[in-house]
Length: 335
Image (cartoon, one colour):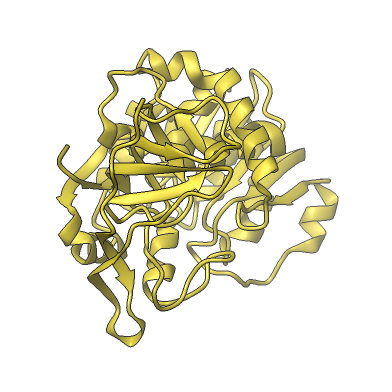
């Protein structure tokens, strides 16, 4: 396929120092040898976007001048000479940096082909980070086996909702999810939770124990941390595992080493910020092996909270900051 002529500039949401996030005209990125350039049709917000919008670092990215956005979907426009299996014209969903723009570039190994070629690109944009994060946390790090019990902390987030679905799809015998609002808890069952718990209720650990005949769950996927880190230990079975995925409730807390030791709990921290592209590619292969048929059949999907135009990125970030959403906030572009 002949590569169309590219414009020199594009619209993008940029971190502008003390001025916050501003829509600016910036150069269209050019792909490196192992990169693909994608015409962005939709992008999805993640919690990490809030820190980037405030000028904080996210791995190697961040600071004034950063084009924001971590995941997107669209059509490949051009590809570097080392790219294999992806070609101009392909519809893909990707992760990287620079999603809140008309064009974005990423290493081709950070892209997925759409599981269904006819999939709505806005729905595809919601998937790359959630799929990789939760498959890695549940399977590779958590060692989930059919019949085991799982607790997803922060289950009403986009990544959390995917975790509920993946756990059920892979045969978990009991799936518990937490959310602090009754409206969101009422919706968790539709995404795979057998029971929804409220972590602001002082009795939530006792509820976990009640649902597991006093044992605790085999696996906790913790997106909260902070004061919940030690409480999670009490809710985990002897010989169980806690995988620390996120820190929405705090990055520091008192840790109950005695319970950790007595219950012989494996505590695993994870992040994608210190993973190489080769490591990300290996995770992507495992995702495709385990989840692609279910994705193609529509059995794994995330709800879209709202669709907004590119110019509304600041308002989208404000909505996420206010925690007003359920599912994914999507930035959509015509095409």
